[in-house]
Amino acid sequence: MKQKLLIATTNKGKLAEIHHFFDDLSVDILTLSDVAQDIAAPEETGDTIEANAMLKARYYAEKTGFLTLADDSGLFVDALDGWPGVKSARVGETSEVQCDTLLSELEGVSGDDRTAQFRVCLALYNPNELTFFTTFGETMGRIMEEVVESGVITAYGYNRLFFVEKDDRYVEATGKTYAEMSLQEKNSVSHRGKALIKMKYHIADITSPKHIILANGILFRGGKILINKRNDPHNPDFHGKWEFPGGAVDYGETIEENLVREVWEEAGYTVSIVAPLGKIYVNQREKGDEQLLHRYQLYIIPHLCTVESGDGVISDNEVLESRWVTVKELVEYDFIDSKERMVEITMLVEKKIKEYKL
Picture 1 (cartoon, rainbow, N blue to C red):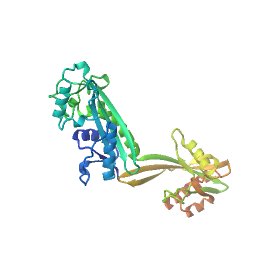
Picture 2: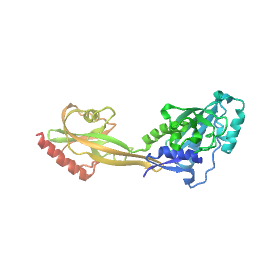
Picture 3: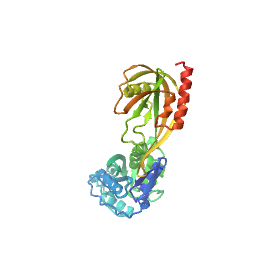
Picture 4: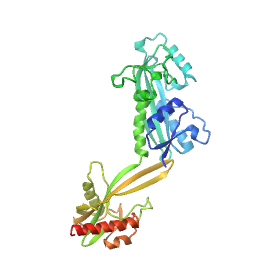
């Protein structure tokens, strides 16, 4: 099951650009036409594109319960003191009316003074956590003196008037109006493309499966193994079950550095690593539902260790209690891992103990 993401717009041009950008994300994209109920559009009362984007994202998220992305954009013309700006979409109901109105307002303004910027704000609203994430994009250009009629690919809004000067970094995409750009070209240089790439990274971060490396220490001392009872009351599937000390590898750490640190913090012992058991275990886990789903995959790498020093003072934030048990007794405890896995781990531990004559 993938995370569902509602794109809160009925503008087919915007939808095409967003679909193209998000095609490789691990999400199921929904449009307003996919939502069962008929939702009336909200009144856009904000004084800025940011306010309107956030207003729309929250409105549709609260109506549907889905993680929702909305945007608001505007064309800001320097010679008109930023007009039409936040009111760009309300200048007229069609692209023809919008373009004709803008040309009338700029009558008598020379080419060098017809500079403008397209700006956009994307707002992502999470109705479960009541949080926003916003990104912005801006592209500089100028307003043509007449509407482009030939070579038009995307004709909505002011696309046929907004010209982007030639840029050696984007040779194929520039030196033409938005309307003459292919979808791929426009997404590479447009204001929306610049905001979408930042939003894409964020959505990937919160929805793509996380891959977490866990280093576990199987501490051996005096013929016995240390096990910890987990303190995790907000995760009842794991709370009160047994496990070996260890934790997720932090950025910049090696597995060995992480293991030594985690064992000390959790169990109160300094250890020497003897050897990895020679098996990497993989667990897949999910939290939440289709409206907000968190998926992650754990790569668990157990290591046999010997205790060098320490008083065994546990971290009561993570551990309810600790016990030293024989290798044979491991399978008698209710571990987070399955009984079958614990049988295999027991066999591997016994093998390593003999191999290293511990």
